[in-house]
Amino acid sequence: MVPEFLAGALQGMDFGFGGDVMATPIPPIPEEVPSRAFLEALAESRQDDLVYAGGVVSSPQQPIILMQEMQEAVQKYGELFSARTDLPTEEEPSAPESAPAASRFTEMTERERLDEMTMLTGRLRDSLANGRPDQALQDEIEQLAGHLPAKYRSQALVRAALTPGENGQRLAQLYLERSYKLFNEDYLDLERIDREIDALER
Image (cartoon, rainbow, N blue to C red; front, top):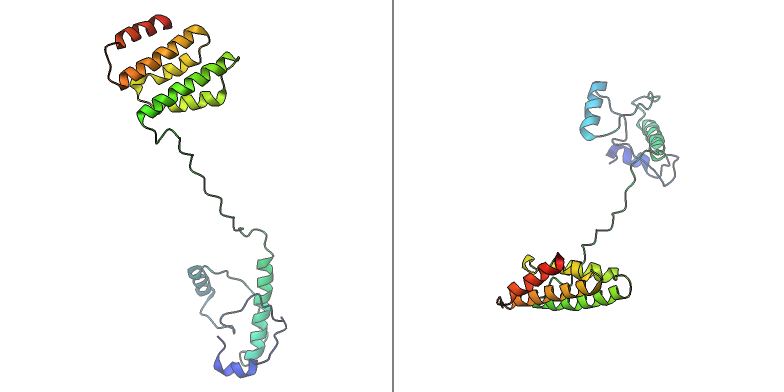
């Protein structure tokens, strides 16, 4: 803010910098301070730069000329500051990481997961018969196995489904049969199924 006693004198005055003033001194006229230590403490408290701009040529009785000299020093400092290459650049905010897609098996009931396991096992066996298992199907059935309780031994079922030949086919059928027996709490035939599984896995 320009002091009232200078306002009239400054109207229409051109300091020689056009309309694009890069920096403005506040206060607009140099003030006498007790010491350099005072300035250093003031700059530190305000987190300001402390710059030596040379001596004052004009006398304190010539405020207009003092303002011109002050503005010239500040303008030069502003130009030098803007030309710095070590200023931190504002980084663009990175796109938020997308949350992993929820598995389609998450919302299924346990019975639906068993039915899905049966379907995927059949498809995986078909792909295996063509020479090699379909990797996408294998990934899917392994993911589904992780959503089933341990009592179903679904990881062993996946291994059986990936085993070529009649032995793998029979093991996969037995594990699926065993899973449905457990789900339906039909325990009478479980011992026979487990014995047959053990015999095939030896």
